[in-house]
Amino acid sequence: MTALGLNHDESVSQQITNYADNYAYRPQPEPYLVDNPYRRPLDRARLAGIDWRRPLTEDRFASDDSLLANRVLMNVYESDSMFLPVDGLRGKERDFAAFYDPDSRVLADRIRPTAERFALGFLDDSVRVNGHWDEAQTLSHLDATIHEATTGGFPVQTAVERAADPRRAAEMLMVQMALDGLTEATAMSQNLGGAFGPEQSELFKIFIDEFGYGVFDAKHSTLFTDLCRSVGMRTSPHHYWFFYLPSSIAVNNYFYRVTHDRTGFFRYIGAMALLEATFAPWFARLTTVLRTIFGDAVDTRYCDEHAHIDQHHGRMAVHDLLMPLARKHGPVAARGLIRGVEEIRLLSSLADADLLAQLAWTPSARPARSTADVEQAPGVPEIRDIGPTTAFETRVADVDTSVDVSSGRVHLHFSGTGDPLTVAAGSGVSVPKGRLYGLSADEDAVVVVGER
Image (cartoon, rainbow, N blue to C red; front, side, top):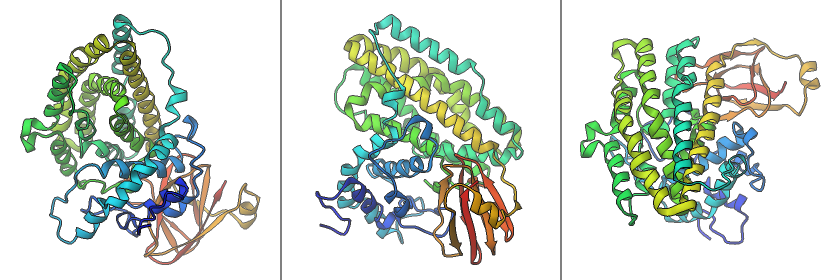
């Protein structure tokens, strides 16, 4: 047994809560993680309440359990990659050692299969790939899917443009994009080793484009950093940790899952090829929206680069990588490739719906519920004491929820940027089911949280 609780006799649930005890994952009172890529708070108490034997279903994708499980998975996966602070390691040595602690990584390997099944296992039921897929059928299906994705409009960009606060909405979108944007192609890099013929070199061509052909200023993650910086957003990895939606983390985790599992290789290629083949018009539309909102100050080279290079990447991924693999390796490869296409299509659709709902929610204060209203509401209300040293957390409301302030005043955080909504004593706010929110207070306050 070590300080992290490595014990073969413990349940997986206990091992997951032990994993959350890592020094790097400790709670903190601030809503942002400043210049430290290792601090990624995990709420041990909420994790302990998850029944890991009951994997998420598609209708529970935007839930608090999904948020918690996907946060754990992200830490598990990313501890396999190298992170160093931009301003240097001095003062963060303990966090560095904790994040890459060998015992923690052994524990991560032990809990990973359970966390993967819990968070992403629903794909096995929601996506079915049956029948025989020959070369012509595979290409025909992929062409139809690409056409649908590139001609169906751009609902997220349109919602950002039409939002009550377009700047805040655009920044919330960029918070979700930061999950991949600041570490772009990291999952892809895990499939570059080994030996799998000319297709290996085709994949490397795409990868080296993502890394700017060895020129740091042209690296895609550098361009994304420049985009964020141009509109005043922070650029260190996971600064906005608490404001990632569960669906956004899940999409990122999916690519780590299918690259970590070598038998998921064909699924990875299918998913990656679909995105590469549909990104160009998506990013071209985003450029227009960002320039409308931010004006000439915004640096859109990240979007412009994708609008240009992904026209080529889409062709390369489909015709020089996916189809040769299907042709060479037969039905097993073809089914895996199509499965990857359909899985990322579903995950992207769910993520869009989750983000659109978050962007559409603008909370407002109202009179607090009366004692009688609280007593008549379903469930048992939770009384929370919140103060300046209380650990900050965001959660997803699993039911339509009411937050009522009994004393003091609290700040309700609902997006990665912008001021939170301040709710004074005697007032409350309604949180719709599926929406992400967090509470903080400058002075001691008491809130009643319950179903409405």
